[in-house]
Each structure stands twice: as structure tokens, then as C-alpha cells.
Length: 148
Image (cartoon, rainbow, N blue to C red; front, side):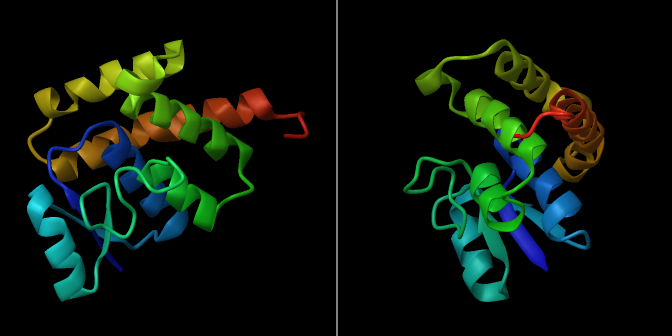
């Protein structure tokens, strides 16, 4: 399936791209376009949009979730580590509104450097996958043995 989002990805768009490729649609193609083109690409090409105006999974849905949380809730709702990761992503993405936890502050700081060390959004998504894989593994380890 083809997915589409705004270009110059940071926290939520990077995390959502990782979530899609790891848990929702491992063969996904993700297009990165101007924000005002996401809804049109979605409509015209049958792509699923995220984190953009007019996208199937908007930046913030009516429940107040970012696209990462909405996709997680739809496709892998029972994964406690992904729930925790969603909390961190939400805090980093909406930091101006909800304040920062140490974990969210760290993710926000790391994400702000993505475009400084990569040449494209595709490269950012590929390189950031290691960070999200590592964070997910650490959260799974932390939650191991709990009944959450």
C-alpha cells in the first residue's frame, strides 16, 4: 500500500512511518510531499494519508491522538510497549501543550537533528528506524513481567 505524509519529517511522522513499516504494512511505500498535496495524493492515488490536513489519520484526530496513536489503536491496540511509545511520541509532538517528560524531551531533541544529518525524508525514516526499534525493545524489556 502507498502512504503519504508531509515532507521534512520529525517526531510523529518519523514514528508513524516506523510503525507502519514494522506493524501495519511491512511492504509500505511512503511518499513525502508538501502539506497541501497530501489530501490530493491520497484522493487521487488511493494512498492513505497521515499527519497532514485532510489525511485519513490527521495530525490530531477528534480524540486528541496523533497519527501514531490512532494507527496503533487501530492495528495493534494490545501492545503495551507501543502504548508507552505512543505516550512518548505524543508528548514530544505536542510538547507546547502537554509539557515534556524526560523521555519525550529526549525524543524531541533527537528528532530535531534528523534533517541535519540526513539528505532526505526516506533516509531519515531508514536511519530513525534503529532509534524506534531500540526504544521499542527497551520499553518491551521494561514492561516484561508486568500484566499491563
